[in-house]
Image (cartoon, rainbow, N blue to C red; front, side):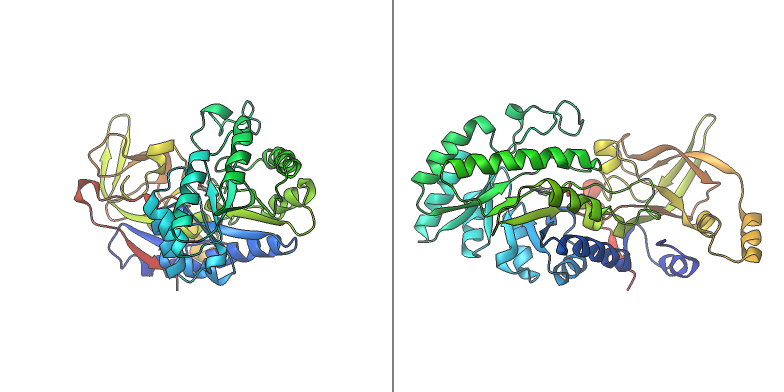
Length: 404
Ligand SMILES: *Cc1c(COP(=O)(O)O)cnc(C)c1O
C-alpha cells in the first residue's frame, strides 16, 4: 500500500506548503490490525494521546473502542471532549499539578497512574476534599534489561519516571494510609520505538514478579498496564504500513501471568499513528556547492523536530520526480515515459529554513535531480510531529490536508 499516486499528488500540489497530509485509510488499516489482534485475547488498548491529538485522528481512534492515555490535564479534557468514555481515560505523568489532578477527579476518570509516594498523598488529599475516591495504578520502574537495550539509558534509581522497586514498602504504607485512594493495579512504560519482542518478554517476567509482590502484601491487582512503546518501520513505510501487532500481543498472552478477573491494558502511541501522515513541503531553493548540494524546504524543525532532536530517520521522497517510477503501478508505456523524465540521482542535504544550523532533516539523501517548486514528502510523520510543532521564528502553523 502506498500513500501517493499521480491523482492525489495532483490534488496535494494545489495546497500551500508545508502541510501534514493525513491518509485516513492508512490510519483505519492500522487500527483494524491493532484491534483485531488485541481483541482475540480480550486486551484493552488505550491510545497515548501525546503522540498526536489531531481531532480527526482522535475521532477515528475512539470509533474503534480504544481508550485514552493522557499525560496532562488538557489531554484529559480533550479526551472527554472528543467522546472518549471517562471509564476509558487514564492519567499518567511524573508532574501532575493540583489543578490537573482536580480536573481529572471532576471528570471521574478511570485511573491515575501514580509516579511517586508524595503524589499518592496529594491525590488522596485532593480526592478527600471532593469526597471522592481515586483509582490509582502504581507506575513501577522495572529496570528491564537496562544493560542490553540502549533505549533505557539510565539505571533504575536515576530515572525520573515511576517508582523504584526498593520504594515499594513505602508505597504499600501510603496506600494503607490513604482512605481516598483505591489501588487497582500496576503500570509500566519502559521506552519507545521498541521493535525487539524479547524486551517485552522481559517486561512480562517483571510484571509477574511485581504483581506477586503486591498480592503477597495484601493488595488485589486488578489491572496490569504494560504501557506502550511498540515501534514502527521508519525505513519502509510502504511495505510495513503497520507494526506487527499480532506478535506484540502474543508475547503478552504467552508470558504474562494473567489471573482470573484481571484486565491487561496497553498504551500505544506511535504504533497507531506514525505511518498515517507525511509532512509535505515544496523545495524553495537548490544550492549546488562544490562538495554538497542543499535542498532548502519551506518545512523545518518547526513542523518536524524528530531528526534534529534525536537524529531520527525519516524517508524523504521527491513526489514531483520519483513517485511513479519507484511505485511501479504504472503501465509499461507510462513507465518508460517517466524514466525518460527521470534524470540523474544526486545527493542532497535536505534542510529547513529556520535560523539554526541543526535545522536539517537528513544529510546525503539520494534523490532525482530536484528543482525549485518540487513537492517533497517526509514520511512517517504522524507521531510526535504535529504535536511538537512550534511557531519559532514566528512561523505560521502548518495546515492539515486529509485523504477524505
Ligand atoms: C508516551 C507514553 C506512551 C506511548 O509511547 P509510544 O512510544 O508512543 O507508544 C505510553 N504510556 C506512557 C505513560 C507514555 O508516557
